[in-house]
Image (cartoon, rainbow, N blue to C red; front, side, top):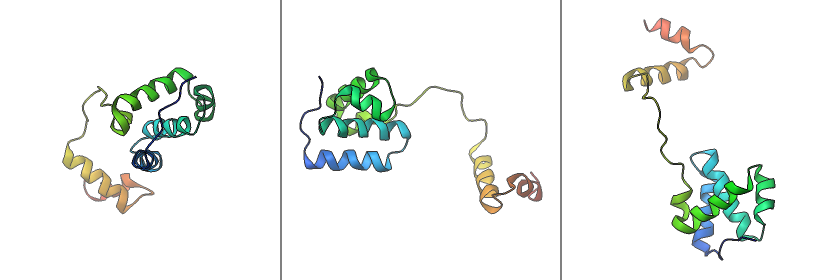
Length: 112
């Protein structure tokens, strides 16, 4: 059986913040797994609750022990560069906000 070491109040606060307001779903899951482990849930139970593989839970707990909350964050992933320039992205966002039902119509009105 594997559990994380006892957590300080500050660590609990940081994990709860990451769990409730983390930038991505995976980060929130990882923080939740650490909190569950600290409460005495076994790896298998955490895996069942979070609906992930038990090996993933073990990796997340190791990441926590090696680097704390920062280690639970999503790593930068390789990929294709963005297709739109920064200005075009901003125009698209503005059009979607101005007319959420039909951003294409909004872009057409703007001459795009």
